Image (cartoon, rainbow, N blue to C red; front, top):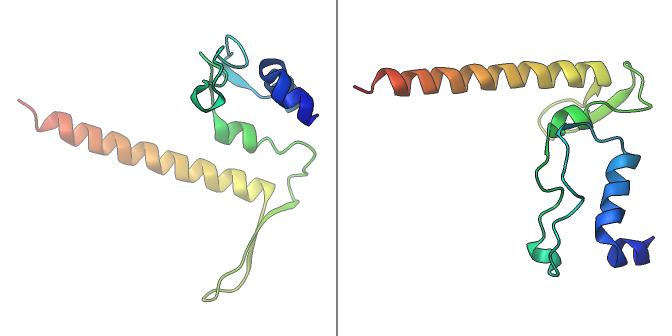
Amino acid sequence: MWEWSVRDLENFWTSIAEHFDVKWQVPPETGRSRLDDVAGAVWFPGSRLNYAANVLRLPGVAPDDIVVRAYSETRPPQSLTATQLRDTVTRVAAGLRRLIFAWASSRSASRP
């Protein structure tokens, strides 16, 4: 696998995206732009995806399975199920959208 991953970057990364069934909002033109320098490469050019939506699909995980365990020195341990994690992310995203809208509205209202 290592040899394939360094010998044929474009096909390797395209197969990884296919294997993990990445859900693209805009599919990539290719797996990688054709650059000789990996450090300057553009991965999946032309694509767009929602990272959180892809991660929160949690294939093979039941809604009531624990997916997050948090430990703190100042609070008792906490756990989140897949459903609780998705609900929390949804609430946080909605709150961020409201804040951004309020900020943008206040900026445009103060302009002549």
